[in-house]
Image (cartoon, rainbow over all chains, first blue to last red; front, side):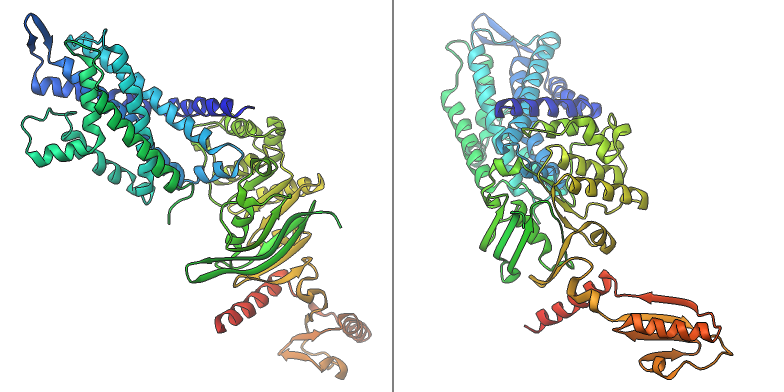
Length: 257
Length: 307
């Protein structure tokens, strides 16, 4: 069997296992929606006039922010945790001893996470449009999709790199949450930054979450242009590349003692 | 002599200041069942994992089926099956799916039903891994290693946690594989297992091979002293003079240690029959593989500690 077919087969088996754990699958899918509902309730969903004669619901900004959260959750958090567990359980070591190419195994996990992320984003958009009358992208759709794909790839690579900082599976949730939750709060994802202190603004711009969220929001709705936030997307891509390089150097197939 | 499946020369490996493997030479012939024994911390796992390709060596040469395992060459991995001590699998896939997934990695896999049959998991084929008992899980480990129909099989304590029946079953599987001409590299703490399965064994202690041979002749076991034990009736005649030499008598029980059991037994039974005595609890014991192993590893670690 060709290596590419083996890699695709890994996606298939990963998905099979994912569906066999319905509780996990269900909450993976509704988790971002819960945030969309909570923030809409907390901060309201009023119509705002963004330009003369153009009015959109505030949800038009929540939906892409929660889409960013969905991608980060499905790719970064999920991959970092799942690979740490697989590493401690010896799944990675067994795979290493088999003729399956390493990239094909990781491809299976990452592509599955990216597909889940895209499904989550679609669910968020549909939910936001139906219940909160969010305006969905049309003209800027290519920019939105491109940003999603770059973000999903970058955060997957960062999730893989993160495993190098996770000593064991028990520590995985603590390490992953401590690294990502603060960033989600200071990066225009959960709450928009309004006149933040300069240092906080600096910190948030130093990490990829803010650039990703800003790029998604910018490509979801804009008055003119393609909506592509070139600089932000490039910065997210650069972080992804750094994540890939760290993974290539430090990724471990055996439990770290 | 058949060609070597595994050839190790001058293998060395240190972890920091600790020298785990201090120059090992080993040859495993194609088609042989080879057992590697040694206490925990003797360098056994390090050696096996270098041969399996999981660890890098510091010095020496290792050739497995003509490949250097450190290269991670897939042509080698396609001919090898590995059963490690603790490796997981996806808990939500079924037994059949797990075996099929691994079969897909190999150019000429063994038919799935045959693999299931070999390890006795046919009835569990549609159960997810979460539903398996410890012993069944271990059998699935073996099944995965057999999926690619390997030429060379590594088994690291393959029957730990098996009940006696399952253990016998696993031994038969291994015997059958050996019968098909597979080379098997076995590590185990169970001496009866090694004695039953291995054609040849080596004992590793303090990073060195300290004994090598067939299980029945290891370290001169076949020439070692034999112990003859029996009980003397309370009101019987005295033991003849030539038997009393080298005998330890404690009340009624007698223990004769000898390098010439044939002659001693002849004299003993001849005397007993003539005197119309029945020797209760007559027992002839050669040192077990375990006795040999314990005495060798004790000596070796004492030597190692002196250095």
